[in-house]
Image (cartoon, rainbow, N blue to C red):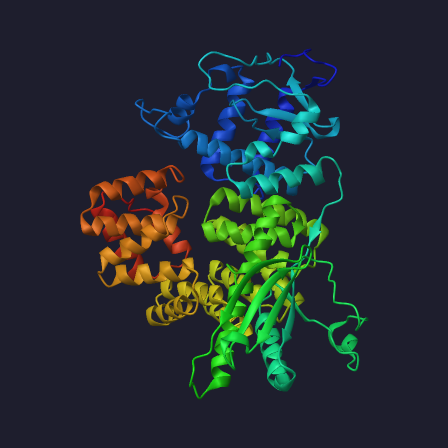
Length: 585
């Protein structure tokens, strides 16, 4: 849209070119702007071309050649590098201005559909600005795919972050940011779900029913992902002193999303077994049911029942459990701040997806402005900061460590707080302290295999092979769900022992182009096996996310505290795959 068009909706204001340059330089120098050197270079290029009046000539090809150093034979229809990196820069800008850059006089945005930056005077109700001395760029230029004109301000507000959505997680965090940030709507602050345990059985089996209920509550209460209550049923017991519920007549009705775990002792499952149902208390819908069967003739019945209870607790409240997964799905459908952002972060970290991690980061930062003492939010944000920095940002690591320390102070019995502290300490190079935090997390919740898996991985890459493998195998055998860190540890162990075929198989299971460690392992294993085509394909996939990874590869492994032996073994495989490592990297 040119100046003067649709002036009823968009008032073009004037701003000096010098102000734009000052804001651009300030942004590029701000350590809180979490963007890679490639993204900073791209932003400067786009702003310079705009100020020079050449935005009409900026295409994917010119960016690839001029900014990313691609050869003249580059074909944007084959290589998506420009589309991917522009999307990431767009998300990084949005995240910055929604968190720490709210007081900036100007806001730089990258609308979808073209490569022309837009400058928003924050004091002018989010109106696009036209620069003095710079001709406005008319949309609809030839040979540019899907150039879109500027839209009325109310549409810009609604679409600001949705344009950044590459994945559902990214879209959820972005859209919610618009609603609360730009419209001033009060945020919906979600809390962790509640599980109400209700165990029933024959009157003659009352002691056994009580023991089963106690065991279930104990197992579930070890997971910080849920709040656990028992259903008050008796009028002769002061349940208020136990549960905080004043009434002993009416069923407990918590304010958060609530699920009833309805358990029948004995039943068709045998004397020590039980049948169970998970019921949504809002709709009374049975979501999942099953039977925990006891083995007939087993003498150690108490041990057997404890194992059945442990398995059910993991299946309900584990990081990939029934209740956790249902809550994550609800967060995607109805985004909220608070615990909802913690769930988004869990999804992003499990998928090792960089754009989703950026979106979760933004969501958690916004949550922190409303819930500065929420231990779950603090711990999750610390973990996300470590994952986003990948050992390359001392500022992010230092902040992650402070957040994790605060989380442990606020929630000293939370395994997730100590797990976050473990990750932050390891990233900061405090390996022994990190292992101490990890063991503390595991002791607080020995049922959470994700903690064991992550601790095992950190032990392994630092050179404690046997300890790491033992924990990885333990995490794998206790859970029906795949623990990514455990599989990666076992893949690295296979590679270290020369079992390259098995290492490659495991790496394929975890294949994610944005997961640099998995991609490197896959390339190295393929190189050791002489599978040049697979090594080449994996290399190109990695380049789509990290264009020139060779110069920084060794430095990155050192930053993540890989043992010298492991670094040497991986480099040997990479060289066989044709990767030329810089001697100074």
